[in-house]
Length: 332
Image (tube, rainbow, N blue to C red; front, side):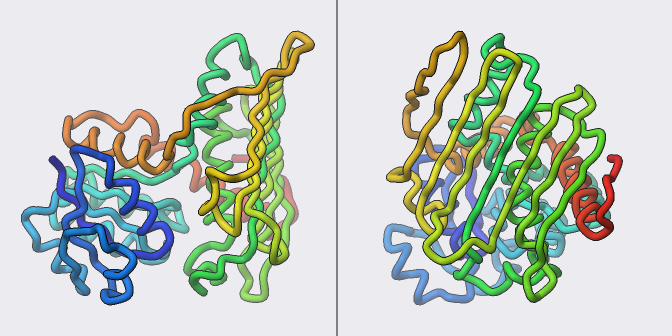
């Protein structure tokens, strides 16, 4: 059994807490939050302790894993402190906002011989797992074109999302998902070209990127946090070969809170036929966290999201940012 200390209890922290409930070999025994009374009400089924100081988690010898669900600009500080305390770490994406910061983090993790896992959750999302699996068979072999989008309203549950120095805007917070997945699907990138808009604080909050891959595939990826009020959180993914296509479309609520009741379509096209893909319901965050806990408990390598992939995706985001700022195509 792995004991977990959870840091942060905003939207994603609550999502992680709920996802741990069915995991038999991982339990949250302590939560670090500054909003104890409010959080006690919304976590009535939680039987562990609350602390307000991060160091209290780090000094707790019963805790094996620190799960960091904090704003991006705090990740480096909190990860390095956890590593120095000998704790394994799970951190929400993105790992950081600069490659240099990522290298400092990984250096601290390696020095202290602890494991670090970064929550690029699309690699564990059931429909995206199918897309990846199909790409390894004749059903979707030799993908030529990918079109992906992830569109939402400006986040309202916290103001830090609007600040480019704290979140990196939609570029790092939202675009990160699909950029990471197209790399996972298609391999290394040759060049990127991006256009977009900034919010009033200077954060890129609508980004459209064209990626050219070394295997000659192409991808167009769009992300927005500036959709009008009432626009449903929407994501879609289409992968095409010369003879087939696989298309996913989802329209949820304001965020992903109503994903199970959302308007979903997942269709495979081939041989002049159209077939819906029926799937069992699955929780991507539970899949992800269960995998991370198992890697720690069994001392096995993380083969789904290795840290080299995390750093490469961050390099792609920096190249996209460079293209946005300069208006030029950027070689990777």
